[in-house]
Length: 139
Ligand code: UDP
Ligand code: MG
Image 1 (cartoon, rainbow, N blue to C red):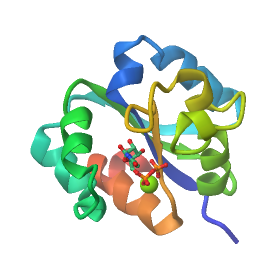
Image 2: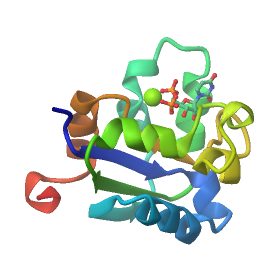
Image 3: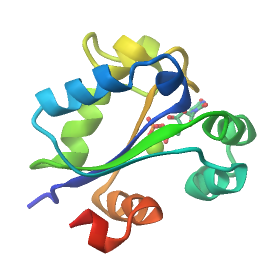
């Protein structure tokens, strides 16, 4: 049985472009329930810690600067088969390759400034949720 939790961030480009409301609408219309949500501005240090898994990748330094360059909205979402279902809703990392109607297809600017994050596994969904929210807030 798949777990029912995923973690998302509406990224700085989408918040700055005033897409937050439209993106939350898409998430709710797709059947996700919001279990926890907060608006915050990551420091470079926090962004580097969140994306530590990518620290050897060539885009890491730019990614950290971009993710700490403006406020984000972080949220824990609930739905059956949440991780896979949410990855489908947001579309491919590169918005040029994202299916029509997906959040990245509609709202992302580039492969870096791609509007939204979605966890890639049940394990990472829990790790990433715990990065921003205490258990008490989550459940
Ligand atoms: N990213 C980038 N250049 C790349 C690949 C990724 O700037 O060539 C950024 C982009 O913001 C992406 C994040 O790094 O969302 C994490 O990359 P990952 O491969 O985990 O993509 P995701 O899981 O977000 O689709
Ligand atoms: Mg990823």
